[in-house]
Image 1 (cartoon, protein in one colour):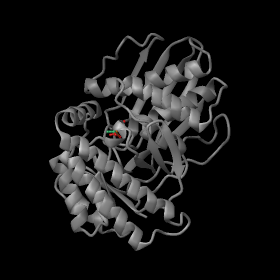
Image 2: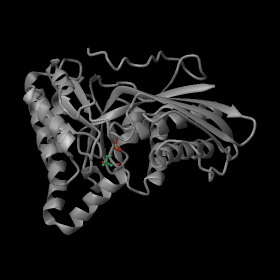
Image 3: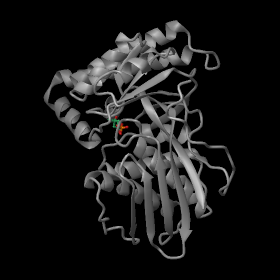
Length: 355
Ligand code: PMV
């Protein structure tokens, strides 16, 4: 059995605009997905997902994966989760030249599903890593990122950038512009995440922005303006000392840019009442800045605040279901202790811990 994990992420800047070739800066956070993979004798794939913010489900299907499970959870969510796991299995089979390989797979995650924290990317990245190791063909993180992108691209019918998958595979802060993906050294930023308990439909939200952009010049300009904000933000990060705590002046300017970015995303129609309420609660509590993260429509916001104030304020905000501090995850995909390959420690984070 091989167990791998990969982190979720927040977007410091640039979601949606990245789909049109503008740069984006996502940052990996210490919320992870764990995927256990065990090779089977036959070509079946059995998937058990114990905690995907769904009621747990277990399904078994054959290599063709055309059969869909008969389980009592919302069908779109199951299909989404199954689709990503299917696609990861296909990538691993292809990479290891083992088209008929069967697996028992267990997925466990503390990243809310579809909430803008990169849950699907983390599952795909960890799944490809564990399955290729199980087949005796480990891949390096850059290749896992590339294969995970192809898997997401397929499931999301072409509406995916490389941002989530590259960030999850590499860890830390990254910069993605089209096919150009790089890691960037950055000080550890004091992220606070607020979660409204909901999820947005990434495909629909991306399609909505696409339509708006085709119909209105302002929307095309807005996408370009987000790109300008990202370039300013990444210049600030480049100039900062990655080994020192971030200076207040850096946090203030990054926060300002996050506020601008949120305003532009709102203009593109991808925010929501609960996301706006959390963003304003964070700002009122003294956060340096706050914005939605990911596709929007519902899910999570990210704020910058080294003090406990924002988290406390979010917890008292109607519509906010959970608020937590999210440390930058410097490690991307990794194989876990006691399984094949190198060993590392890997304990679940305590979601309640506020360091
Ligand atoms: O909500 P998430 O974590 O799936 O992020 C979507 C980010 C988008 O820029 C809207 C789409 C993409 O693939 O980059």
